[in-house]
Image (cartoon, rainbow, N blue to C red):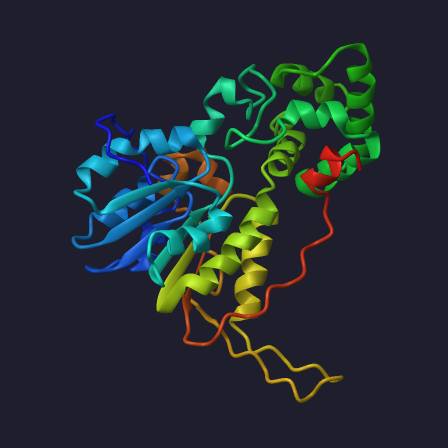
Length: 335
């Protein structure tokens, strides 16, 4: 837990912020988890409702440090914890919370991280090829240097949905024989030589950078774990709101909520097993997207989707088996 600090937190309006907080329907006496604190936009909106308490989680120490000013102004109603949002259940236990009234998640990289060249997230700004949201584990440069061609192609294809993943992987392996690939510009230039973009299309390196960022930060595994943790700590009637920014994330959120909003059928081989009752009631049959005003002010909102659900009184469902996509641990130990 952090202590108050007078440093100023920048005013930040999160994408679909008002819609997400409206889905939470915060009330006096309610306890809420901002599972991806970032610049504190969701936390600030929740704290605007008198009598609420917020526990903000972020794995990025810069985000935690930036929130000290809001901690001070909250009068003891905001607690910040540096941790992964997949650990939100453990965070709640450590903070003495048996259950909470609402959880909000804004999945993926933040605009603050993208705008800092030194973090290495963006091909628009030349900087070290880092991409880590926290300060631990391998960097994107480490992955580019150590993963073999097949591993790189798989990472770029699955997490970036890049059609030219094999060509990109081949180009990376050829280039690193001449010199280490240490900067965002160096990698972007390598990708641009084999992925051609037509005028008006996204930058050729967009999907490769997305793939490496997701892989380095284990974002999809983190999201799946965080959703399961939210199911365990939300009280009956508690609400979950999740904003995602690309199809891979939204698909995970959609499938998780849809499965848990339906009764699980018993196995035909083991018909005696009781059906799992729905653990969530959907609040959004279809995802909420940004309106014209928000799109005009923030182009990043174009891909944002908000899904929300309310916890029932049923027991949490059994966690699904982990998908068989590439994992950081495989590359770290050499395949």
